[in-house]
Amino acid sequence: MALTSWNTVIMFDQTGAGQSGYKLRNRYYGGTSCTTKHKDLVDPTCYAHSVEYDIAANKIRPLRLDTDPWCSSGSFLSNGTLLEAGGYGDGAKRVRFYRSCGGGKDLKCDWLQSKKILSDERRYASSQILGQHDRVVVVGGRKVFTYEFVPKINHEEESFALPFLHQTNDKHSGGNNLYPFLHLSSDGNLFIFANRDSILLNPKKNQVMKTFPRIPGHGSRNYPSSGSSVMLPLDHQHNFRKAEVMVCGGASTRAFRAAKKGRFLKGLRSCGRMVITGNHHEWNMEHMPQPRLLHDMLILPTGQILIINGAKHGCAGYDNARNPSLEPYLYSPKKILGRRFRVLKPTRIARMYQSSATLLPDGRVLVGGGNPHPRYKFHNVSYPTELRLQAFVPHYMDNRYQNKRPIILTIEYGEIGYGKEFIVRFRVVEDGQISIDNVEFSAYAPPFTTHGFAMNQRMIMLRCKSIMVVRENASVSAILEAPPSSYVAPSGYYLLTVVNDGIPSISQWIRFTHDA
Image (tube, rainbow, N blue to C red; front, side):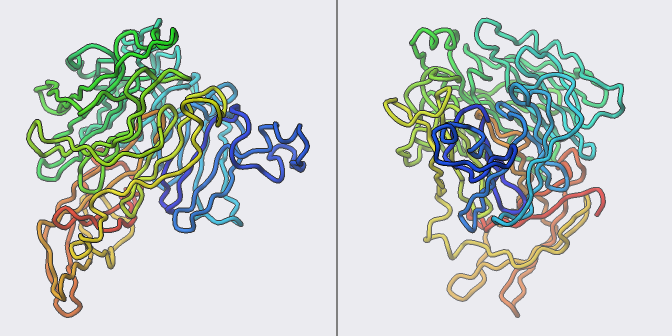
């Protein structure tokens, strides 16, 4: 699942799962009609396996997939194009591109497949956009202990060995280092976390700069143990020099082997936070209210972390988990230890393996999916394949906060150069009077979310240089400063949000670029 800068959401599953919930009139392959005959009703090529969801219109449009993207990775390029790498079978070395043209049934935007292929098969790999213009690094994969760049610098460039992936591989437990957690530090280096260990890689020199302490406790954090990770918002108050990573949940030691024998071990409750910049590195540990794995961690416009979806026992993989985590958690990073977690109202829908979630511009969180089975199963199972979408509505959207909610009127310059000033005009009116209190401004890079990890997710708390009330039209004019470099904010589209006393506006798109 991925939110585009056209306010649509791209969703896809594996092409080999059988008949999806969206039947096509004509096959993508050959264009022949899909009839009501049995052979067509069971033919997966008569069903869509990727769609574009138009949020405002609440409509979906089927998209064509030429190769299987199951267990792939994704990153957004500077022009809003989604670069999607790897997959399964015929898709394991493929690179695909999707650039939305705004939804609607009559539009012809579709997946394009690159003629160039990856050096290695990338199933269960992760990708991260780098500070260099439109350069993506893809790390790991099943039985693959390398990383590579897209695009290549030259025709001779291939993949680079990463012994760290060998060292973190539990070969008898499904790996436990797949879908490694990647975060681009504000100094341009790449944080890589796999299993229980982490390093800092200089992607320009292809050199490991640091080896961090092992996260305390037993168990594992990466697929198939499937905890999750997030980099906390980068803040101008620290001149963006403090980058802090958080890792939460995962599976117990030997959970993978136990699940294969029908025993489902309790997941991990622990979370660790560590500053990855500077010279002092130590994991600061705390505990979630319950054990959790297979969950998503999303940064809300308030800077809080939403932990949603998942299970309490088992691990990732088909029929490997039990006891769904129905209650989301709200984590407040700035509160004191012991008061950071808040348990929210539960859903009634189990969202375990292969579920996903993404933040929407209006502040809601779109939640979908969940299929613990090798193929679609809707009946006679404890956890059916889930085709329903849900919107999780955070507390800040309650009507009682309407008088505090900012309304963005204009943003001067849609494309903004690094370190440049730009103006945001907004309005907050309470009882006919302008009412602003503790105003903050954030820029958020939406992620590509799969298998419990929101790749490329990033929030930057922007510096406000001045703020002025304009009485004539009851508005507020703020002069903001763009991030200083593409290491802090890789070039591309971001959701700008005005937050007034903890209540966010509806977000609007801006673009940070080298070319402004």
